[in-house]
Amino acid sequence: MENAPTEPGSARSQRHIPPWRAPLAAALSAALLTACGAGEDLVSGGGEHTIRLSWQGTDQSVHYLHGALVFKEHVEEASGGELTVETYPSEQLGKADDALTMLRSGITEAAYVVPSYHPELRYSVAWDLPLGLSSDRSAEGRWRAVHENGPVVDEYHEAGIVPIGALSAANTELTTVGRPVPDLESVRGLRIRTGSDLHIEQARAMGGSGVTGTFTEMYELMDRGVADANLFQYGSMRSTGVDSLIRHGTVGLDLPSTGVSVQMGRSFWDGLDEDKQRIVYEAGRVASASATDASIREAEEELELLRADGFETHAWSDEDLEEFDALMDGVLDQWIEDIGGRAPEAVEQARRLAEETEDDGVTDLESDFESFPF
Image (cartoon, rainbow, N blue to C red):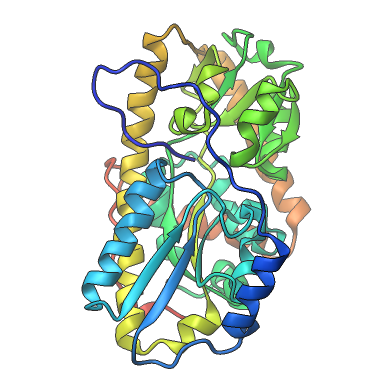
């Protein structure tokens, strides 16, 4: 969901499709599973350890530059070199929707995880609901959620993973390949690329249809005409090449961006001594705030670059926005009904924790390792 900041005054980036790598080959998978003991206890507290960090975006994405690399620098410096971080951007170790499998099998020790790609992380998706949260408040609230008992913490325990980061991107808007979208009615009939079932329901509520595709599939779906619109934030358009396709977009819908976490395999985490766990925890906290703030800035910069190249933005009327908000409230209610179980509790927790945060545009994740229940 990302792209590197651009030099002031530059025009649109070069048009290209980033070098997305193929899924993990069977031979590599077998080799890594053998080397890592297929998820058994991989480390003993002291000594030197290597953390392989699997990342969805490219090595030029804002979350990678300001998240993964910040994490790596902090871990290696704070541990005096006893912990080494190897980063693998562009899905080199496996596809984003295979992240939990890679963590549990030992293919990677840590990974960029999009909860909406994984049905077993259903309660974490509550933070993707249209709750009216800004990106910094979403990241701060999700970080607080992993420090108290509740549905989110419980599903992480059940999944065998440890949340060491909570990142957000700028809020989501609707962009199109060719059709102007000056009002809600103009959305009708658009084939809208989204990343999850929840976002498909948002697309349908707006009058369009949903086309499921991950961040890495976004360019291909729109280039081939499978989708002619996109629900996404304005950052990362250049890193995916989508900036060469889109011509119109909304401003002011402010749907929440897809929540992202950085997770560590539980067996690896448990094998670290407490000092190293603290280092990893603190690195994840610092990197999450850094990546979220950089992503918000990038979206603002990239929107201006798009406009300078002829991209047209559309602000809807107050009446259309009121109708849009009512439609999104319906999506929220339907999600609670469809998910069932502890879904109401997950939404209540998200609202409560978000209210405890400050909407000041700066991501401030508090350090509280003592209450971290992992």
